[in-house]
Length: 134
Image (tube, rainbow, N blue to C red; front, top):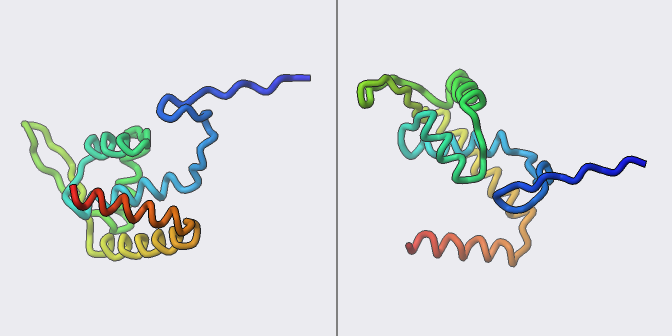
């Protein structure tokens, strides 16, 4: 009888690799990108670093095709700008992107209402109150 391999541990939270429920990570990454592009123009390296702060390890080979796809879908618009002597491509949210982000936020809110217990929802609401007051 073969023994099951011992799963490797993820450095961040001690959980076994592949054990995290990550059903929508691609969609969550898109939401992060659209959200940040709604606040200010963004560029690839900044997004990679920002996403890493939220636990997403995204390579340029994954991010740039995503950015191009979002641009082809007319959710983002890009432009080039020289920064410290180098051309950098920035992405900003389009009007359609803003509408789609608003729709996604509504869907996310509806999902949270359905899956969170009252105590979890209150804890989440309290975390917003602390964040806003800081």
